[in-house]
Image (cartoon, rainbow, N blue to C red; front, side, top):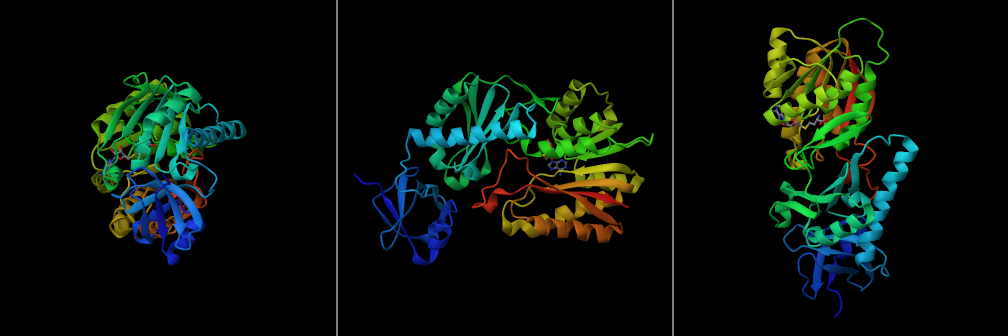
Length: 406
Ligand code: SAH
């Protein structure tokens, strides 16, 4: 029996020819055969020309995710193995070249950007944590876990597919051991010589914000050359489990105030800071809403040497960019106001719907309203183990600015 086929509207060929991995329902003029969700489908022009091959999901508006543009390439066990090997190999080479090889926690597979649409695999020490974001990957997750066991021999592969976007694929959340041993309650990882406890069972995403690793290192370097015998105080807003705090304390920051709305995140932040040998006091952990806490600091005249703003995604889609913009502007406006002259604002957005350009405009607007002066010292981006395929600009989601403020 031949593979089912999707026929593409003549006006919608370009994106596929330019190797964008998504085909939306509106681009499909007709279907030959009756593909099951998750099944492989050949993609053709109405003149019968082969365009690509991908997997199908009738429940998603992204009807097809493309895997290959080479007609002779079959999608079998060997295909998945080769793609996984390529992604894993790339990380190994990057580690050797950039000498950041002390991290034993990083992203091994970055979905569309690694030619594996819908699949995320993160390494935490001896364990792998997988997210199956699409129907096509969900249907193959046991096979993928088996290949990962074979290639990397981890202690186990654990699934954390409890992500909202699965709803758009018609899938419920799914969590559990896919292969090998269950992970311990907390996995201790090493990141650039810092130690962190990661809760891969209940933590955000797969447990840790691996995408901020290189930005944490930049923050950690900031006060290193500072020779003034001044007390440096950092405000770490949206602190989660204290990633930026551990790096800041490792340089010349004497104090880091961590603000987060989650009790559990702050408890783990406290443990992580202690694990790295730094003393803390209760006042260094503030449980609350950043929007309110920043206002309280403004009203009480508190000032900081560095403020880190790493909020959750305010825009879930480009349509929500405007509402999100108000949120970003508000915290950045407060951030500018709370900095000492010569202080540093490290500000991020991980909303895919807010472009780098728009984000800079929002931060600019906040600066003008705050009546301060500032310069961009560095543009920040997601870590290099989260690469962006040139054919898939949607892959670039994390952007940030490090600004000096007067
Ligand atoms: N900087 C962190 C990651 C931050 S994730 C790191 O490098 O690891 C965003 C965090 O913001 C989460 O811990 C979440 O609990 C917290 N959060 C979300 N909305 C909040 C709010 N309005 N006020 C305070 N914290 C909030």
